[in-house]
Length: 459
View 1 (cartoon, helix red, strand yellow):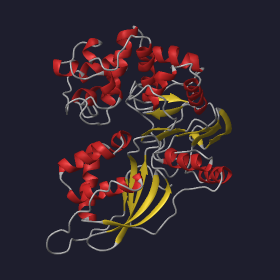
View 2 (cartoon, helix red, strand yellow):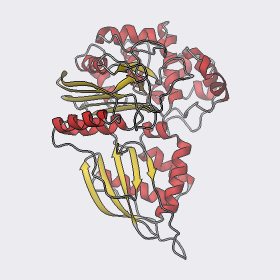
View 3 (cartoon, helix red, strand yellow):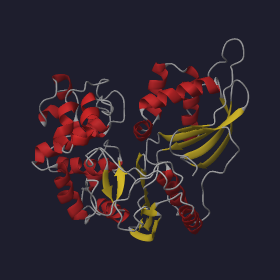
View 4 (tube, helix red, strand yellow):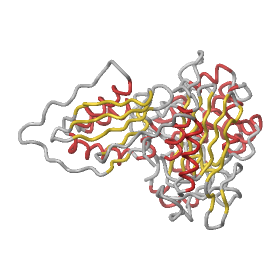
């Protein structure tokens, strides 16, 4: 499967820079297609190579979801590789598949060409959601002339052991395609079916965001009130400066908590949000709240804690009652990994040889790791559309990235990804595509984006 949406660097060949000073770095572009502007910004930042420039590039141009999947440390290491590879590289050819996907021929300063494949977020502000660099033979971008052609492709990939999951395509809320492929657990002889529950990763954040906006609508929460008004135990510089809106927009000043000693030591014992908040309260801010964006699971765990504090309910209980209930979602939640009908994750993207047989984390949280079915996710979408979950004003806040209550067109693209799982939801108000797989990223995103275009979806 062509890796369009996950950052990968494939078969890069070392090339020494010519003697003498490096050529001037390419200038950033401020006009023309946004896709090309993002590509030019990436080349300029990689050419400069300084940590300050790269940090600024990531904050302005890179989607938080990409930083989460790759990690900021790995992202910077790859930028360093590309700095040595490209030098003052420049764009010499462009092939645009859509407003958010394209391929660029890059002339390296040391001679030769590579291809840069770039994918932007489906929804504004259309930051970089993934990119890949390849100097191998030219290969076509995944695209289908029709939805039927796309479904034939998925069926062939499933037959070859390269696709396992569910594809749902809907128009105006009604499924026109809903098919299951591959194995949920090959060793047990259990195929994926339409009621198989898949790990949806960070798409749980959509549920958390809707829960917060419900509480804002009820007057229980205020987006611009500091979190100290709702949760105790944080130091003053956090409690008095970080707001609920900062948390929703990944602008609080926190990053991830994966390397926190308490999380590393006790991951297998953490069940409730209180378990996470006990050590999250000790994590210092990395930057002034509101000044830039950095993808943060930490912030969404705090949002989950706020939901519990102001409602008196456990996070999963609140979501089940106030989102799952009105939407009719019976197969969505932070189920333990021993629950029935779960898809087993498989690593490597080339079949079923590497199942993940154990996971230390006990259940999903407000930041991710829960389960759902594609049918349930369509129910969630339709409950958003018809006002069962949020008023029009609150829905506009959700659609606009928590910026405005004014009318906002529907142009959504959300994804979740981790080893052995990938999920994507694309929706333009009419056409929707939901793809859940139990194989590595970016399988669902790549296939889902191509099917969305083939079905007439607007990005």
